[in-house]
Image (cartoon, rainbow, N blue to C red; front, side):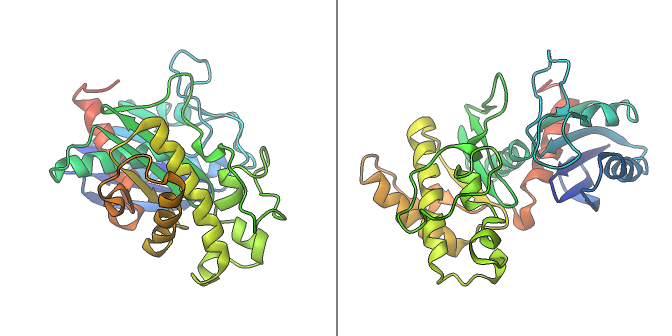
Length: 294
C-alpha cells in the first residue's frame, strides 16, 4: 500500500509516494507553470503506481476548504497568475478513484511536524507552523485539530507595527502592502535591496527589521492561541535569523508570560529539507485510509 503527497507551492510542486512508515520511495519536483501543464505532469507521475491507496494535497492558496461549498477543492482568488478559480482537487478526482485529503500547504507542514514530534515522544496538543518564503502563511493545530471553520487562517496578512527604520518601504503585498507577508517574504529582499535573500549578509540591518516583524507575529500567536510550540520554516528562515526573532520577541513580551525555554518554543522544523509537508501529507493520507479523518 502506497501513500501519495502533493506539496503544491507557487514555485514548484513536490510530488512524492511513500510507504506506511512515511518514508519517501519516489518523488518528482515540477515547476509551477500553468495549471494544465503542472497537473498533467503530476498526474502522470502518480499513474505509475498501481498500489496508490490515498492522496493528500497541501496547496498554496487561498483555497476553499468548506466541503459544502460548490468551490470546495478550488484555489480561489490568488496572486499567482493563471491560478485563480482553479478546480485543483477536481482535476485529480477525475483521474484517481482513491480517498483524497485537501488542505493548505502550511496545514500539511504543521501536521507533519505534529506527527513527527508525537512519534518522537513529544506529545504536544498544540502547535503553530509558519512558513516564510515566496509568501507567508501559518497552520495551527489546537487539541489535535486544525484551526479554521469558514476558511483557513491567513496569518501572513496580519497588520504590524512598522519598524522605525523601515517606514520608507511600502511593502509588496498586492492586497495590503505592509502586512506580514508584504514585509518579510523572500521577494522583499529584492524590493528593498535589489538582491536575493541568500545574497544578503546576516549582519545587514534588514534582518533585524524583519526579525522585529516576525517577532510580532510570534507574540500575537502566543497571546491568542497559547500554543506549546511555534515552528518557523521556509527559505527565509535560519537558526541565525531565529536568534534575532527570539531577542525581539523577548523584548516585546516583556515578561508578561513565563516561557520556560525560548529556544524550544520558537524553533526551526524537526524534519530536514523542508520535508514537513510531505511527511504530513503521508500521515493525512494514512489517516484517511484508517477512517480517522474525513
